[in-house]
Image (cartoon, rainbow, N blue to C red; front, side, top):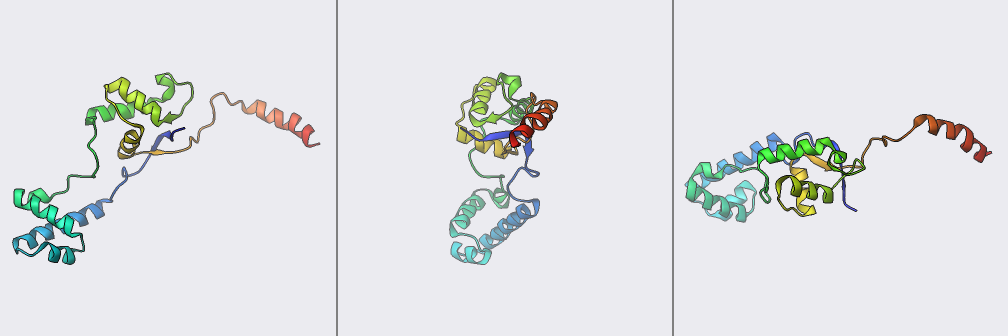
Length: 170
């Protein structure tokens, strides 16, 4: 059984770095550009900036090819989405409608169901793991649904507790 995704459970900032942390990373890349201009060795730059030499070498290649502008962050890492922004907006709207609107009898979004929904809506194939990453990127988190069943009859439950359960406890 896959994870259950609760309707509307979203991270405040979509996960990842805060705005302050992103700005700090951009500042380090700017410092790297200044040090590249001084023709310092990658290991020296890595030590000064407290980053890995591998990162410095990648930044140097980008800086050599495109200058300081090429060092600007392109956002979160990972595979690019197979869906464009309009499709992602539509997916969120369809998820908000709930599983019943798409033919499932209960109100639980599972990864397998979302894989099928994406296939139906956009003719795009995702794995459950890929959908998990996609959902996290758009701000959905795995949750246990907090809502009670629609069929729940509070009066019947109260009566059962008062009569049947009271007799059983004796």
